[in-house]
Image 1 (tube, helix red, strand yellow):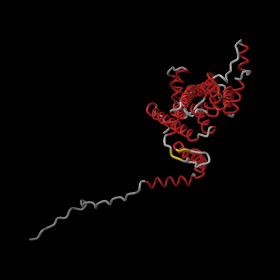
Image 2 (spheres, one colour):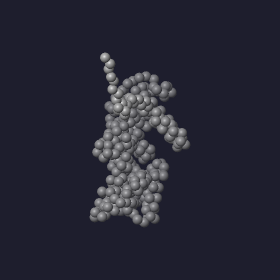
Image 3 (tube, one colour):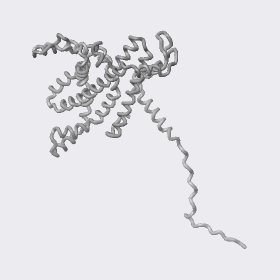
Image 4 (cartoon, helix red, strand yellow):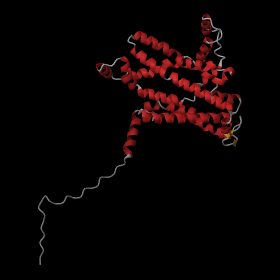
Length: 330
């Protein structure tokens, strides 16, 4: 018995199975692209070497010295301390009433600085943006920028000379029929003096970033607002301020991060033993405890406590800004 086999008509044969494409590494193109960019723009990348070395040598390597906050350090001995003492120095400053007075002063001075020094550059930038005469605008910018280029020593010297008992301010007060005020010796005047000098020195320079941010706002938005009947104040509120909001939020987060690190140099130059009740802050207290009293481990413990608070503040501010405004540093 013979069996017959039927052949399929031409064109209906099953196609041969396709070969599986070879897998390619996903990371290879990224690595190749990074190496190609490095070879192409190595001159630009080389410019980052010095800043990276600066942060490595003066910012990250000194962090190793924080270990003496938990070890007893003696001048002339090991740089990492002689004996492990645990949280002894932390308990010392937590139980020290002077430290808590200094901590409150830091909160007061830092809060007042943030409250008054942060919005002033924004207001000044908005006012300068409304000036149409270029000559007047450049003159105001130059005058407001100049204090930034002065040394802190010079700023403190000018402040002390202006507010001295026989200084110009007291001369004006005397002409008005009042007794001279000892501004430099009175504790209740220190915070006002510090914040006022800080505004005078930093307000003009801080407007540079905001003026640069204002140039990125599309003019068509102002034209559309004018067509809708918005006046100048409404244009500022609904167009200008939202346009510079990312810059405002970024600088606010940075200022909050340095909230506890109140200007050490200026406070050290302006204060005196009479104004310690309101002028002494954590940075100056650490300086007196560590350098003048040779209590380096105690000062390191306080400095580490201040750094932890600053880290918590900047992290919290960044998370809050990301959730509420949608803008953050990272």
